[in-house]
Length: 331
Ligand code: SF4
Figure: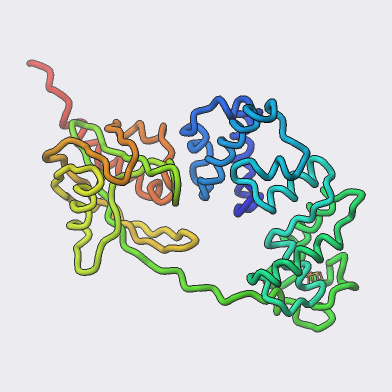
């Protein structure tokens, strides 16, 4: 969870997670949907799917125990350099330096490193230096201290040099402008897209579809829809996307919400339309599963955060329709 996400955000997720799935066996036995539901809102859902797959692999190949050999541990799904170094040093005292974003910044400033840390040579130089600095008698504590130093003291902007325990060894501080480091590649501008989404209702139920396991938001449930193409109206895009994804004909009604959401690689504006089912049987092209659910059942499925931004409007819009759909009692 801590890969890509800050501690303060992770803590409640972590507590709920270990309460519900306290060990490797429980995690391996859980359906992946339950794991995604516990992860819902944390983002980077491949981490959840990999953690689940890793638990199953641990049971299959390692008797349910986490191997203390870095090479064996590295073979588990989702395990890369950062996870290997963090887990092996903290749990098993293996002398491996962690080089997350915080540590890279501290190391680059300590040495006033002129190399670009986004390029392979610069990244290598930082990792080698972190490995040189590592306290071999307690690598886990050292790694955690370095990560904390970067997060709390050697901040990206306004580093607190006067409170820093390594200020006397720091070349960037001596130079007088620490925030010049680390040298990085300029950020690319994040593109924007318009998305049209349809909440298709039929007999008091609403259609949700499931994304494929691989790729962005993999395995999550959502309302069908997609990108608005150039020259197309959002309402037309909504009907077209629904036809393409689930092969249904719908009547696109009022727009019930418009929300904005930012992913790391894309900013989106989502327009959400209430749609009435008109014809067809669901045939999937893109999604891997679907359900017709009652609006209150949305809480049982894991949706992307962007969908949660308009979930209240969805429920509000569907409530009167459901009341109307109830059969009248005979007088
Ligand atoms: Fe960072 Fe300043 Fe400490 Fe250097 S002295 S490591 S720039 S906080």
